[in-house]
Length: 436
Ligand code: PMP
Image 1: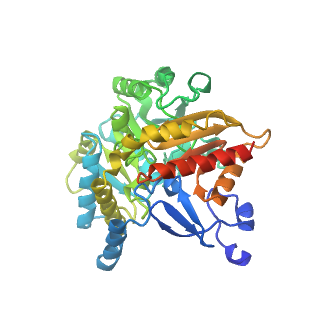
Image 2 (image 1 turned 30 degrees about the vertical axis):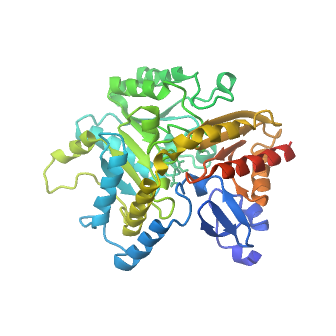
Image 3 (image 1 turned 90 degrees about the horizontal axis):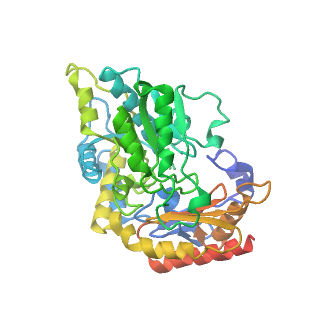
């Protein structure tokens, strides 16, 4: 493309001036690969952006979207509906842990997070505990970019430009503990005690003021931080003890990433709400959802029948194209056994990933299921640059990875084959060596 054709688009989360000097454009994708505008094939090591779990351009999903666009392009979601919204909600509710069987649709992870936070506040109000307004997030948490999400989130860069946040938000510490857990394969042994931070906040603020706690089971965007053994269970116990809702943000971990439909199942802890997006439509249409415990939903249903129970929703909630894409996606996952495929591949993936230990500047490697993080010693005074140089190098060599700070993240489509895992790791090995 000509430089003048790149002018108008202000790209999100991108160094725009740098990008426009050397743009990287994809024009086609299929299965495990992208193709660039100059015809190069690039192996997708990150499932697009943690979302294309079944691989690209899968026929069932393509057909579902095409058919839906011709049949019913749009239906108003307030006081009206269309059958596929119910059908998809039903299918999603069968994948979530038992009890979380009411599904509210949104258009993104960020919207799902803010929806869940509002639901938590409204829930307490409806049942007569309207003083429970405090929301607890976690340092290094990422919960999207809307005001609720950045308030409970703990990524400094996403907050400091904007000043105003939701009031009455507090944070517990993140669980990353390199000194004790570096190079752990799977869940770290040490760190369950970090959950006690929540008890400290209960002591500080009083439980009667706290509505909900939100955490990602695995913090993806801040470096693939795997929860220490027992940590999520402890959070659950403390929430139960004090009547606080526990929300899992499974935007990244949902839909097979950890070897089950949701990380809640992998780690054996059931939250009160699950926030999801990305893999719900295999990235093929913008859509998110919040799965809610039936008891929470039912609390909203006690007023007069002619009244709206929850004053919230979007013009594109349960959009027909997204619902069709979701149904095509879930059918593909089911037919190909993709939601549990990470269980079969995780041993091979872990071994390949941890074979990078000992390379220059590799200071930690973390993984579970088909998600991995490789943390590098950053260049002095230039945080994130070494990892970004490795990203550029891999891209030139035909492999797409992702970096966050000085951590390289991998989360390939769940259809990946062993030799493609090898290709990603071999390419990374070369790039890490060249970046030394
Ligand atoms: N929560 C988590 C855990 C995420 O990883 C993301 C996106 N990476 C979001 C929320 C936001 O999702 P979206 O970009 O669809 O708004």
